[in-house]
Image (cartoon, rainbow over all chains, first blue to last red; front, side):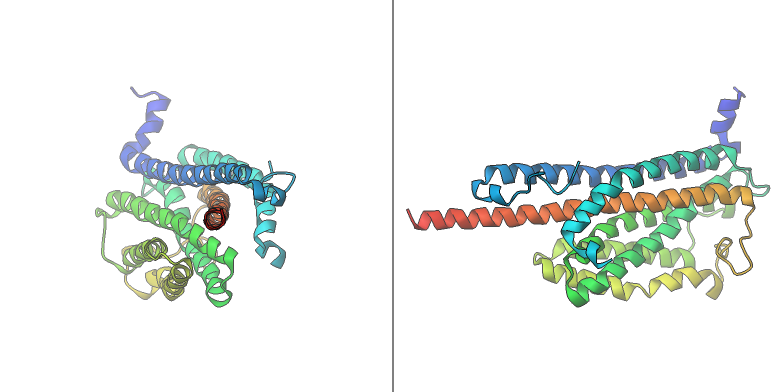
Length: 70
Length: 247
């Protein structure tokens, strides 16, 4: 059990402190990015449906559809 | 600059920027992890715990930077009630809160093996904890007040008053006797950290900065779209009421 890989994971005996730090950062930043991205997509889709269902507003929509581009 | 203060121009700019900034964030984080966890040297005193620095220090810098962004956007929002500044201030606060929480958590995980304690009520740690509560207060004000104009004014005032905490954090290690070490990167006589350790530090800092921009753009765009949905829905309600009155 002293291969280069287990040595890497052991972090010279400080495995808990090092991996907990990187793990906390990965989880917190990952979750925040995912929530922010998803809310952007979900609201954009909802706006698109609202615009299609509102007959009086169709004229106001730009030919490209949404402002979000691609 | 004024051009991008227009919400429609902002939407176009965000759509153009996001793929590049988001892609660069992923690449820089991957590089930073490689150097931080593997390719950088072990410290002769603290061993592998030095690797925590590459998370802790960028998180702490971003915690303060994000607050300056929130306060910087709060000022025009308060003075001119600028809609985009409002959206920026609201979108940046949760990102800053997450970075502050990470600075505190990784600080504890670094302090325990190094100093033998998870927490000490000294100037640096206490002032960063105050920063975290300022963020939470700002977010809570946005959510607690129903009238958007009142909510934005209250949050902006809190954010601007709280700016006083930023120099206190920065200089806390010089003004008070702290367990925390003094500045070792941003100092007048140059960094006191070895170059091999500065590489992963700056890569991680650049990654965190681009991450901030990416997530800020997503959040701002989401907020702007939500405002449009609210406007469309209230217009639809008004039309429905009108057609009920005139059969």
